[in-house]
Amino acid sequence: MEQYSDAVTGAQIRDLTPEVACAHIVYQTHPMWTPGMEYLKFYAPCERLRSPYALEMKTGDIHKLVDADVTTSILAPKHGHLYYLCDRDLYVINVDLVFRGLAAPQKVATLPRKVVRVEGGLSLDSKENVIYAGVVLEEDKKWGIIALGIPPGKWRTITEQDFRIGHVQANPFVSGMIMFCHETGGNSPQRIWGVNATGRGLHPFYKETDDEWVTHEVWWGGTRALFTIWPYDEEHTKKPHGVVSADWATGRPTFHAQFPAWHVHGSLDGKWIVADDMDRNIWLIRAEDGERRLLTQGHLGEGFETHPHPSFTPNSKAVVFNSSRDGKEHIYMAELPEWESLPLP
Image (cartoon, rainbow, N blue to C red; front, side, top):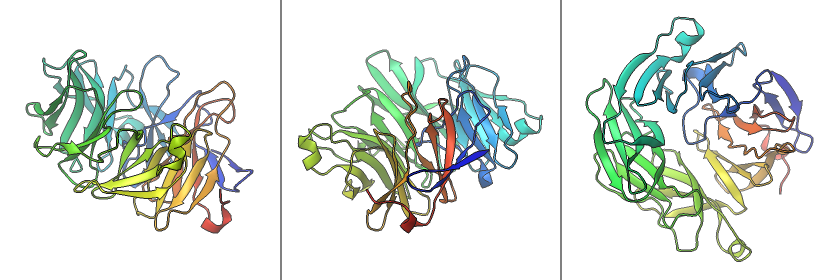
């Protein structure tokens, strides 16, 4: 793994995938690490097949986890299993067994007939005993979230909506809580929603005003979600915006740092927030007081549109992200340096 020092911040940065033609981390809303940070799941988006890969952190070895065209997948971070969808069939495989040459995929279930396709992704309950899927029920008319118990039984419907459901995220800390969004590809009238796994308690997670552009929600801690409010014009730079969190029960917002943040993630220890911006800078934010400092920069190569999508490692000691700084899309890791060594805005 190649390493360099950021020319502006001095942070030590490692290229985790130097031998791969192109590599992207899993979106920061979903798990990407097996227990003990032994393996990192990632994708190779330039390949014809949408197959998930894994990197063994100790050796640097990389293996394709499934030699098939995978529609979508979800990692079980406690057990190291990968659940994945090929066409309409759901399978499971163990990541560690793949690296030992002992893996054999097992079919778990088939999507119910009423489902047109999975579109809002897969997610896994914190107990890793229920899989949730965001689905299309009627083309351009009805969307929903369905659930399947493990061991598999029958699919059940949690909620149906007349808007496109995206970014289905089961709470990774508290069982039975699901966050999802009204997906438009842009600004939604009401972006973030919450619902219980029973189908009850549907509510706006954070009730936004008519002129707020809310986006890129992700769980942070037991019952809070982080997201960004994008200041999409000059007028909105004068209003509260940037990195925000809200509580499941009240929806009451806490503003952590005001700047044009785009993607956001919080550390498991609750001490840090990381966010990128449209210049592909990656900012580290101290949660206790909202002070932010530049962690690393220069991650957009010429001819690319790479977004860093920064995400904390499970031990809260480093950040992984996408970068095209060297003319290839690779996955990098930045160890968190001493706070005072990083430059202020």
